Image 1 (cartoon, rainbow, N blue to C red):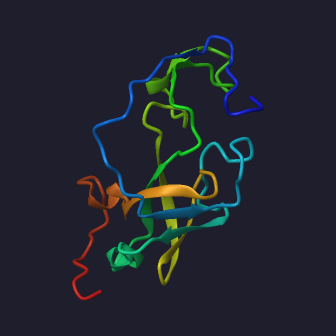
Image 2 (image 1 turned 60 degrees about the vertical axis):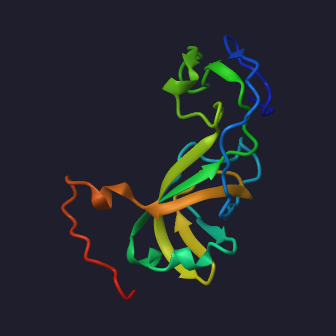
Length: 164
């Protein structure tokens, strides 16, 4: 695929209804080294490059305590993804057509991406992390501790972070 709008054999698009029932706040912007989908890794690596989560006002105070965690969940809006494919032919699946909801493709009706990232540092309104797989200037929707920290299966005990 050379252009983001190219279709592979077997792919099917639909006319999506107009959006009308949700309001999202972009809390920041993600800075990565990648400017095109073709150069972006398929999945991030915790040994990959350091990326920046730049948090906008008035959300900066919400960063208090984020440096307590080793891993974070980053939720972002894949702003350059098409939203009309219901069947896709992923290039790494022997060209077999599959439904959008059976894939982790960025091409989806609501192009929300998630990554579990490794926390590196907190610098003012910027969180430094490793493990992202999105384009530079991707809008940031949310940031939260990795859900495994709170899982009953987790061996890690998380003390209260009062006063941090």
